[in-house]
Length: 170
Image 1 (tube, rainbow, N blue to C red):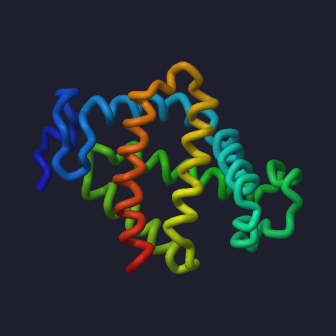
Image 2 (cartoon, rainbow, N blue to C red; image 1 turned 90 degrees about the horizontal axis):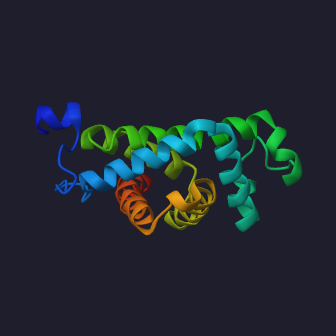
Image 3 (spheres, rainbow, N blue to C red; image 1 turned 180 degrees about the horizontal axis):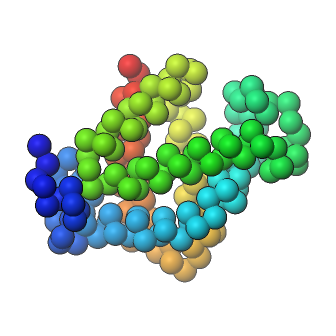
């Protein structure tokens, strides 16, 4: 059971490391503050992520019935593609919002993993997506994407993926 103070205020000390997630208060703040910048235009960020994903791994577009046959240059204007791009960003937003509530974090991400496991997606595909997301963050944030920020996001993805992969395998 989480202490009530943590549910309300999160980590009050930047140096305190959550024993479950391994994230320090500083990590959480870095992730949340940089996410606030990226999410200002969720649609554009999501489109950039998904286009980068398909550019790096064109074979993955075939997993999406709604836009599998849409030429890549037409994807940004495709409403179903836009909807999926937004759903990726919404999942990230829910994750960032729940970093101080491990129970909610686990429930959301395990369910997400289960939905994707039903579609027979793999851990490797999620790892490929992470690379693209981090690249988009690096481009969007420029000098604000410091080594410390990248490390905080790396830790966050490790936590995220532990729960997603649990759902994939269930």
